[in-house]
Image 1 (cartoon, rainbow, N blue to C red):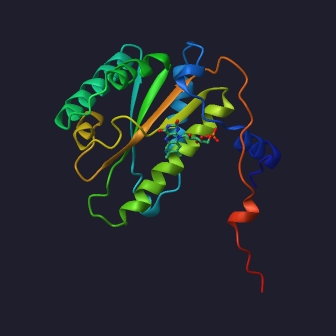
Image 2 (image 1 turned 180 degrees about the vertical axis):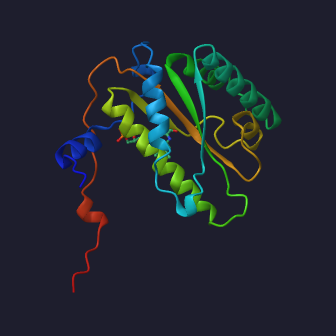
Length: 197
Ligand SMILES: Cc1cc2nc3c(=O)[nH]c(=O)nc-3n(C[C@H](O)[C@H](O)[C@H](O)COP(=O)(O)O)c2cc1C
């Protein structure tokens, strides 16, 4: 019978924090750790085993490729409705360069559409939580960013996604340069109803 240390798992879950690029030291994450993060993503629960998570991993010069792409597609889209903001353009261009790795988070829609779309998005979110926890266990910081170009239809193709698929954001990863603050949550009691009779 398998046995785990529940106290350790609880400690891992509660110490997981979102760690943002400004908090990364510049040190690179070992490839084996990135591979473990991806492998553990693959073990998320998945209805009908559709395994809808799709990732593209950017590292080294690939981070510049990503930043250049994100800023250019932002520019293209923003110019269509006169909302171009140079600060946003620069931010999209430079943010990936602060990370050790960036992983795009995609949902590949089941071709037979055997499941409601939301269940495939939910499965990808479970996969991302596995990634967050694996990163935390290795002392790696990460965060799921869903801003910028995430919901641009025109951006999907670059990340290997088709019209029915969805881009859900980016996991930025880096080694935290200092201790992480503790998190906070409102009481669970206010979010749960018990029916015991
Ligand atoms: C689906 C999803 C999308 C998110 N998108 C963003 C984002 O675009 N920008 C951001 O600063 N944080 C984003 N976050 C991270 C949250 O800000 C973070 O989880 C929250 O502040 C709680 O902090 P913790 O993760 O350290 O517990 C996202 C988290 C999730 C689950």
